[in-house]
Image (cartoon, rainbow, N blue to C red; front, side, top):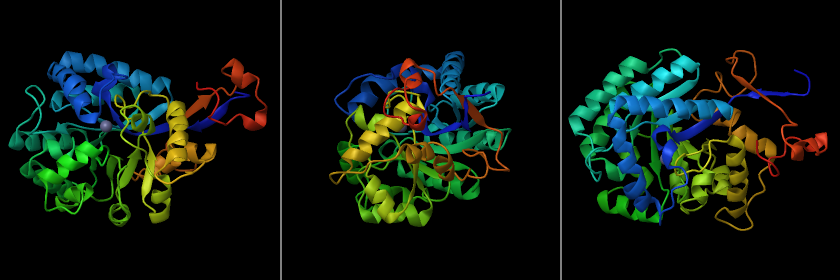
Length: 351
Ligand SMILES: [Zn+2]
């Protein structure tokens, strides 16, 4: 195809398929957003037919935007995982998904029960891990939504199944952090709560990682855990900005994610542009000017390193899966008018 760009399929390191319908719902912050929009909506996924219909829309949207690999949260209902991974299998996408664990501080309809939630998680691991392009992620929603018994059980499963992924949220919002400190007073930090339950290791992906100190960053580096940087979500609920300078200085893995529906778009181009803004803000002025090449790397080859898939997807090197997208660098009037040397810039027009 002359004039087209052949590029690795994009990797979204953190997204919630059930939140496809709540994108762009305004709230005063993370916790009211969960209470007013997300939890009532996710309760609907007890209905397997509804879960399947949303899974179809979600996967078609990912594919339309060139995203071929994603780590996605489902809801607390095991059938939501089956719905998503069945539909993904039909489309040949690489999806890593997990049933959300949340046995406290959650309303009826989404709250699960400790022992049953762990049995369900193990059954889903046995059904989906390594089946075709599917993978399973043990998925505590976030520490405040889980009892110690549930987190301990999750850590035991993580030790028993080392090839399985782990995904959760950490240090997104200051109210959330204060709550985690109150619930887990013996932990050095919010991130250290997860360490205490054996949930920081290779193949563990934590969304946000905004309000970290250098000890947290070193803990990420030393355990091999990775951050899913979610820039449109940083900007929309106004939680803060990922500190790229800190991540580079200490050196822990990170890559890009949409975090739909706290994030506002499935488009990797929107996400890369938002990451540029977040990099400019940073925690220390004047911030960084992330290059288009670096932003693209964070959504492909760099992102692949986070879940340990660097020899599998995110690149066109020999041995990788033939997982690629074809991009038209003249897809819009704005792009057609641009000199060829600037065709890969992300700061003008999105696709
Ligand atoms: Zn999220």
